[in-house]
Image (cartoon, rainbow, N blue to C red; front, side, top):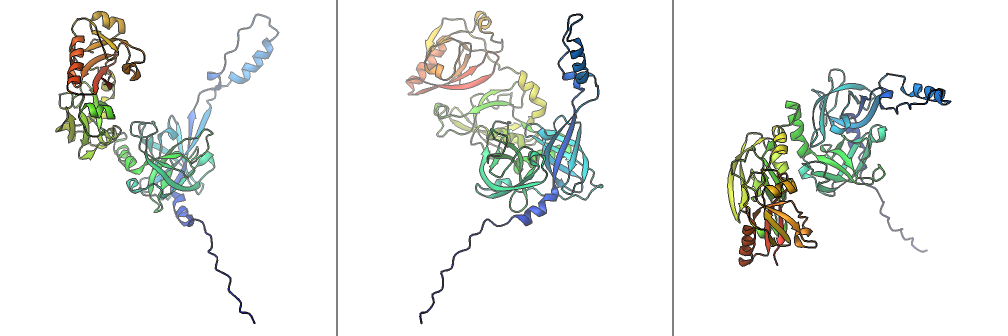
Length: 471
């Protein structure tokens, strides 16, 4: 009799571990946000009735048509839907996106059990797109969810999004963290978490959870040609949101630190021109008149590499770090000036109080000398006299040497330099005549430099740095 051989064991194929228990414990804290807005009477936006000749056969037709469209004065109610989540059950505090409740006359929080509560706006921040709402906690038992550490999240970690896509109601989606520190040019403090968890219209303002049930992001934006999820969604990291929310709850507004400088990236060419080993930090392109450092502490051409003990690896790091710092705090700022590191102390101002000042300020400088024009690095430069100011519309506060012409296909043209811009500095030394421009370029060539670092002013006084090859 032949012995029977046991069949080989086949490994059971299973999917990812269920997140049902996690989702069940979180759904109660996530709300749908509905808003309504008074859009005015229908006739306000209607096409006006045409003027018809006396006795026109179309008179009766148009009278009837426009009576139906414009006769009522009852305001229309426009509604929108989004998501939010409770972070403080005792105080009734709910977080959502600012764009979800923008221009709303009425805001309502709809809970997973079907109950609804009117919500009032505590504060909003347009720069980070965060809004804080409050409901009456005595009218309903609320459940809150805690914030987690978004800095600890890694690419590839599992995350869960809960929200109100397309107005369907509480919906759970799961995915991973696809990327971190994304800049999508939506605001000055972009530092988004990118995820492939399905996020659609209506998810805005909802939470992005880690697998411990902590909120590590606020779902805010998607990239989608069709409006549906294609696996590219963005969330505001909790580390950025927590400080904003705290200020909105305490003051009803944000109170960000302000340094009072205009900055631009440090490119490889600029780093070489400044004698820096690596391209890092934020290059100061100008100092705002009346700002916290309008006293010579920080100057145009300085590169900020550390701020209050935190490294500034690239330009966009600086605005976030400064904004997180308390108004009035004295901080140490490490700068590179003419190839040498220095530490300066700066007392921060308040960004919100300075915005009008920043928009209206113009760079200071000395008047130019009236001398002959010169050709250099593909540009024709001339004295910044009254005739040049009138020709190019250059404001009185701008000083230096005006660029009269830029040769096509030259290095200057490739860098976007245009006639009417003004050279104020070359290699961090001011110039006020065409001859000084020629002499400064010659001196740099004698030093073996391959690039010339130019500080240019627009006709209205906005500054930027450009490097030009000299070989």
